[in-house]
Length: 247
Picture 1: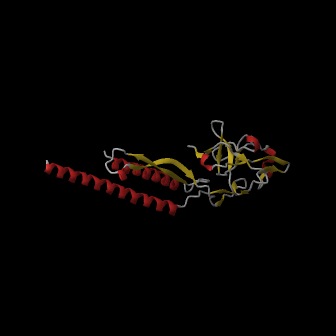
Picture 2: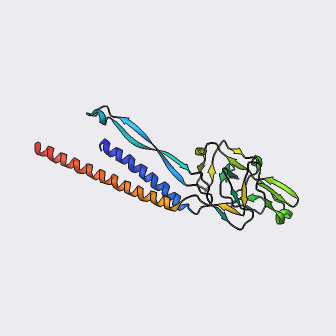
Picture 3: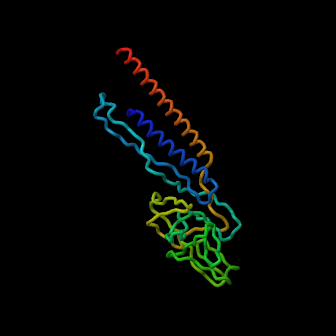
């Protein structure tokens, strides 16, 4: 395999990566709080000192640098549950992940479990200020509400405040396999900085038309790459035939 084939192969791997990301975005267009991703690539230039023509010595390859998620907010979706939360601005709700560590989510489904603790749709405990879970006494259930600053209160007073955590570098916020996010170096917003809406959750920010257009463009680019590969194979065959005739 010559160098041109390796270059085409690196491009086709990048196209495959783009297709995987676009397909995952499409699959999560109805997932609450999902942030669409986009792949990031960079150029890697390799020198070929043995090349006969100086202009052909630098050869560019495509390298996969991972993916970034789009931080734009999804639309507010009313749920009818007065405890469900929509984060009006940046940040994530903190939850206790299955392994005991802290994970993050924009999906603001909120319910109270059998132990009186606030949890999300997956049953993970929602954490308040300082990483502490919030417990609701049985007698407070009838008057339970959540304020715009995250304060959980009942008729007897405040029970705690739901923490919203922001990250200066969103590149460090990465998806987990369970639909949650993992990140480090976050900062909890103060009550004055926190803006929550109740009665609904944030929908996915995936735009189906954009993703469909992306998938069509990827398909066309892959078809072009395959044609180039076939053209190079034909060129090699013709060169071998001519050399054979000269011999």
